[in-house]
Structure formats: C-alpha cells, structure tokens
Image (tube, rainbow, N blue to C red; front, top):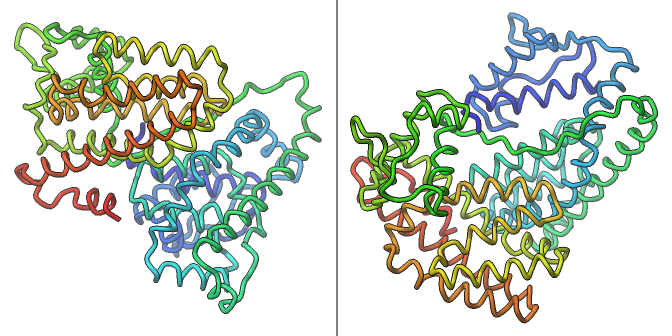
Length: 483
C-alpha cells in the first residue's frame, strides 16, 4: 500500500508508456501541466513530481517555459521490443482482466452512471456528439467520472491500477466512441446510453486486445529460449497516509477474531513483530498505537502489549482510526456493489466437493457458536476458488480490510449478540447449499451483506458525529451512501 506521494506514478506510467511504445516520438511536446492535472484529477505538485521523474529517466526535457518535449530516441525495432518485453509476461493477466472487468467493473460503471445528476448526463451527451480529438481512451475518459460518482477512493484506486497494468488504453491513437447527434442522443433513455457505451467499449477493447495478441504471436518465437516469467495483476493501494500500519493492524485483528491471538495474552515483542512482518520498529510502534486507539490492545509498561479487545474504548477522534474505518467502509461498500456478480461467477465453476466443504464450514461455525466468521469463510472461499486471478487478488485485499471494522462490530452488536445477528444468515446459507440452490444462497448473501454494511455505516457515522473535533468530518461518507 502506498502513500499519496506515489500518485505521481499514474502520470509517470501513462507518459513513459506512450513514449516507450512510440505514441510520442523524439521532439514531440506533451500536454501542459495544467491540462494533465485536469485530465487526471490530480494536484499540480503531483504532476510536477511526475515530470521530474520523467526528466530524470531520460524521457522528457522540461524547458524554462514549462513546456515538456520528448528526448527519448528509439528505432522501430526497439519500440517493438519494448512492447513485447512488457506484454509477453502479462499475456495471461490481460486475458484474465478481460473477464474480471466484466465481473468487477462493469456493474460499478452502470451504477455510477445511474447516480449522475441530469447536468452530468447532458455533458455526456454533448461529449458523445462532439468528442475532443485529444480525449483519453474511453476506459479513462468515461469510466473514471462514472466510477467517481460512487465516491469510493478504494474503488477508483483499483480501477487506475487495472488501467496501469493493461497499459494499452494509453496507446491507441483512434479510440473515440462513434460520434452521435445530440438529437439522436436526446431520444435515448439513460439505460440505452449505458448499453451503447458498454457495447462500444467492448468493441474497442476486444479489437485492441486482438491486435495486441496478434502482435505477440509474431514476436513470441524470438523468446522461445528465454520465456519471461508471468507477471500477474497486483493491487497496490494509494492513500493520503502511510499505509503499512493499517495492513499490520488488520492482520492482527484477523488473528484475534480467528483465535490465533487470544484475548488476555500478550502480542510478541515489538522487535519480534518487526522481524516477523519485515518492517521497521517505528512502523510496529505506530501499529500498536493504532491498536490501542481501536481498543484492541493496551500497552503495559514493562510487560508488553496486552490483547484486550475492549471496543468501548475506541478513539473515534484519532486520525488513524478515521483512516482505518474509511478503508473498512469503502471495502464493505465495494463488496456490496460486486457481491452478486462475483458470487455467481465463482459458484458457476466450482466443484461439488468445494461446495460441500463450504457447507460443512458453515455447519461447524454454527455448532461452535462462531457464526460471526460467516464473512471470513465465504470471502476466503472466493479467494481460493474463483477462476479469475484478478478477482481473487481484489477479494483477498477486501477481506483483509473488512477486519478493520471488527472492533466496531463488537461495539455495535456486543459479543453476546454476535451469534444472534449472524445465526439466521448462516442457517439460510446451509439450507440453500444443501438444496443445491447457489443462486438462492447468493441472493441471501447479498441481502445480508448489504444490510450489515448499511448498519455499520450508520453506526460509525453516529459515533463520528458525537466524537470531539469530528462534527463535520466524513459527511461525504454518509452523503455517498444515501445517493
């Protein structure tokens, strides 16, 4: 997970790719700093940082007038080699993203457009009737504003990472959707426009993919003796604050909820945890401080860090707690938005034996009165069994971030009522799976997930409203959910 200073990589990768792959050639001017800021929705200092690194790495030269020109020189053979070197090890990943995008992104794109106000739709109709000649590839020009309507930074980050991995959205010179008249568009319903945009997107996407794979087929013989190792998609997360502590805290909380760490015992020493997690001692100290603020642990001088899980002690005014609960709510929201498509996609290809194991796990947590593990078990099932590597990668991250909210769940429900809250859902899950009704199970899963997300968000917003120094913070989280 990265800090906000890493956001410059979005701009850096975009222009470095276009230069390496021959879209820009020696002497070409790249767009102005202001224009790039508008297109990427980034601040001026972030784009300046990207320019600095592009200049350092020999791609551009920024003149006194702040105009940047390409100084990278490459013959056509070198450009072909650059393209092959990047895409050959990612060929399987590109194929997988084509599938995962339909499961993860397309439902979100349609949902985002449905949340637009009328003025946004009028702007879209205007754009479709008169697209700018220098507009981004459709995956950026239209998808980013649509996804932005969902007001979820984690989701936008995932989408940008997907585009960065694909890279070819950066490359095409003729990528504008077919021009339509305003009169024609004015007669279309919003659903018809969404259908048209998705169809147009897939036409462009598949044409680009087919051309790329045809090129890779011609150059592959040159790599037979030195086949590159596959490079799968990995989701790197960019936020406003350093993030390692949130990963570590979420892992420790998961360890407590699953019984790896027991309440009343002590965490390993700080040096031991630093060695175990491969991070600096200072990061471990910040992680422990966050756990203290969450009521998960209590630092005892001369003894160590006691695991106590007393959520009534959560410090909702702590900036670190805010950030961690942001991750929790955004992850929860992404799960709600994608739960149906991902669940059905996963269940349609799993073996009968895998479903029997899942059903038995649900039976066991009922018997052991640990039905609060319902989310953990089914998300782990998806991470293990989904046929898409990108979906597995994304849901593994979301599963981790969901643990960030466990202390709040305890505070909201109290430990004694956790079983009462989850018991009916697990009972229904077992009944549906025993009957072989995976669609019915998915409906129940999605309904329960949505209800829990709504209740968790309302509870957290209420705590923030009554927390010192937080009267106005996170109003956008509540507004986003109500839209």
